[in-house]
Image (cartoon, rainbow, N blue to C red; front, side, top):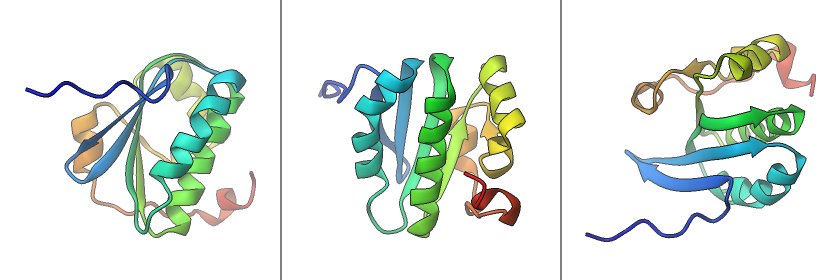
Length: 132
């Protein structure tokens, strides 16, 4: 049995599940972390019609830099006719997503299985797409 390759970042583990690229974020997602993660996120969302899941279940801290990272991923996937789903269970992070409106464009799933099972396309609500 082959082992998983080393994570590309201490904040990010990338794996593939059922045709999706799963970006599993870890630890504290702040300015330092997003600086390290952005190029990896851009790579994962660069192809045509990317199918991406961002998993926040292992995130201990999430600030506005993390919110910008989510919006960047959403915008890149949307521009390439792809789909982006979010997994999040932490109450504080869920509250941040709701307060900022990101929960409306990226409705969080409670599990990876639920996110992978979603079939609806990621789409841009007019009231949010131009506000960032």
